[in-house]
Length: 218
Ligand code: GDP
Image (tube, rainbow, N blue to C red; front, side, top):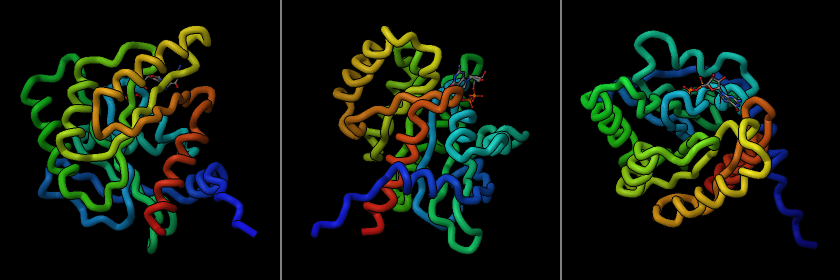
């Protein structure tokens, strides 16, 4: 008899129920840690809902709060999921980009840090690129997608704040996202629409990550 297909929702639920602890902040490429586990990075514009999503994913109230402490907001923050000795997964919280008041120099420093991290990071399985599900993607989102295409990094669009998008408008938001994805070669074909508020899509995101992890282990 053939084996039953893995239940990635259940695997994802279990994975994200594990202990999650802050391990390291890297404000520049020289301070990047050696990988301790396969990595999933989270990127997006400031205010897209990244902290809320990380908290919802890990069912922690204040995990991403760590990323907000002074000196860490412009850093890559690494969180280990699983036991301290043998973590199963590392979540990498990338600094928010596209903040209106940020200077050009700051934007350049984001791109530099991101490029240095993304390039040749064999442990990095995928970047989850968060885009505000209420609006059209911003030019800085498209620029980031192009940067990821050029770096040859696999990434997946995660739309946020689904609870604030009327049911009748959701199809249009998804259609626009599929059209955007079609223009970007390194983008995973399926976006995930999430809400940290209502919990919609959080199980799908956990399942997508559990699937990646299990495929990597094969
Ligand atoms: P970050 O800057 O990307 O880390 O964004 P935050 O997680 O701090 O969220 C920015 C704002 O969006 C806050 O006011 C959040 O309460 C709000 N927010 C985040 N996620 C959601 C969501 O799923 N639904 C709604 N309605 N608001 C959200």
